[in-house]
Length: 462
Image 1 (cartoon, rainbow, N blue to C red):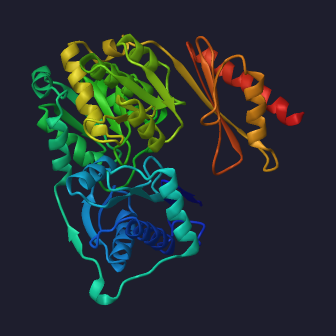
Image 2 (cartoon, helix red, strand yellow):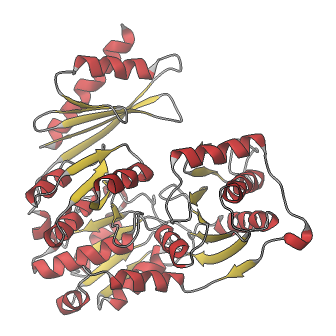
């Protein structure tokens, strides 16, 4: 059982001991720290926060604790209930709120939950802000208001529908082309709030929707991370239903995976590639993804005459790099689409709308569209280390060894070779080096990973 405190929020398993798990006391402590941070960083008398949650079983409990804690600080809480991470981000903007909290542990199993923290732009806190919140929590620098100054609590419904309306307004979302294509789609929402949002969006787009695991009861029918090994049910149902494609989202709907009509994976890395291909074909510009994402985005970007930049891993880092380079689209290779015309956050609703527009205008099948992109294959591994190993020293030695290659050190060490790359990162929570490789075949990617595992172990031994 684990409690992870990071700049982006607090994440842990429900139950257990205070300080070791996400207990009620921990939820209150970090909600209070966030509320104090908001009050310390605004001159406004009336501070407001959007509060939403995914459908996991503990969501109502944690949301109640968080909401009442904020009220005790004199903060107005606008509770939009069952929602998605991107919906809360959009809601902060539309309501001009001072911040937002999403109660969700994203793709983690049902025993987990978390507080994801947003600023007044509906974006995740940057490193400096996150550190301030953690410091307030550590020092317990809380000051609660007297009874006459308590904040107010207001429930506000239908924000998912407002989010959908905002998506449909986007210039590159071709509603008429999608309606004319008469798509049939299977949706796996892992029994969370994507089961509300994605079918409702598809209905507005005139798409026939076959629902699989779309009841938002928090009982995840399979591991909620949208990876190939967890998606056998939808792959089979897409073929059985003779659907045009399958759509899979994680519990808080910021990651999007696609299934081709023959039941094969479109490839989570290629969700962003396809959406970027569509956007860049209409809007000239640059793209950004993190260092562990596929090289295919770089290829597609350069095909359209744009420049590709890599950021450190983490959504807030991608967003900062996108702003710096004026990127027209970006995201992460885990199926996260960030489209600035909408907002600076990973959004599967935006991803679905852009992808279906691309597919409808292309007038080819999902599988045929996937075949238009270069094939890259990834291998993801890790080396468990003893606590006495100096990971930074190991990475420094690897950097020196490959100094004549194209080396990037903004987040661990990434070494770019002509047709493949390796990215070495240390874990922030345990003694592990993560090893990501990509090459032109799965065998090559696996062999590259094995080579670097041996080299790292050799450095440790010596």
